[in-house]
Length: 394
Ligand SMILES: [Fe+2]
Image 1 (spheres, rainbow, N blue to C red):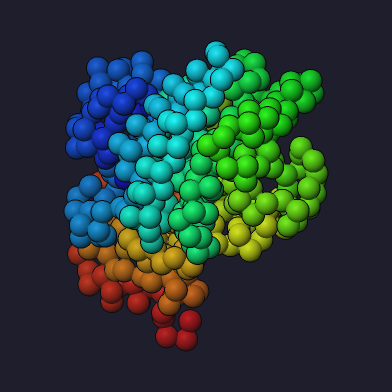
Image 2: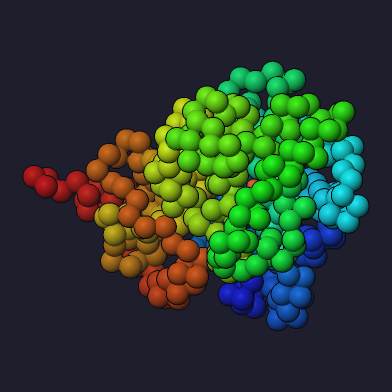
């Protein structure tokens, strides 16, 4: 399946996952073939993108390629959690009083689902409405952080403290002017200084709540500190920053990079992976970053990629810890011929083959039109692949 921006939707595309409105109502079910009025309706609901079935693999059953794409948290759970965070944070902005109970309930609920699905990798980014970034972001950071805590061997008590603090990490944003939160493009110097007060503002609200552990409140206080001491609010350095806040700092940036915003489409996971790696030791604790990145599918299942051989392939398998070397199935050979049953290649074993490019959903639309008419005479796929890639004396 491919994530596609709403303005790029076209009639006859097939919906790959259930689509919910920002207030949790099911708008369209998976397998719906889109018509123009449904596309208009999706636009009106303010969604930025949806998942559609991959035009490249629609003649193949997903089950022939891989089991269903595992989700750490079900879309229904996520939408429900976002709704409750939305209402509770809006109340805080109006009354300046925090009702902590809904956050306790949601963080426990999300934690339960993360524990139940332990071992699942992050393949999909969630779909959010244009004006709901902060609420979806809080839920996603909670999921990513608790998944990391689980990998680090945290017990239930620590996971609960981490989940709650992660969910509430941006509480202080509800206390800065709303115009700053939704402003497209860069902030002025004065606006940035105001925005940078949000960890402090959030901590001041959270530390006075009897049912919020102080250590969870410190996540809000410290989540913009950087490992080399160049962050804010107190320029803490290395292990002076609480371990929970070091985890949440990583989840926070990864989610911000990969999310669609009103002014830009989210970065693809492999690009986000490179950016995060480049920030190891400066922004992030490198040991925790390694654990975090091990659970991210750099090339998610069903991604369409081009190899250095010129072949175009679909990702059909990902191994945790070896995510940069997935297993692929060739769909189009270097001559542009569509293969009905191309060979499979395990990149952990084919060390001279590497991924050269990942196609965006928009590029795939053009690519599909270019190759769909060029089905080539059937050949023995494996023989053909070996002949092309392993010529004697080559
Ligand atoms: Fe923040």
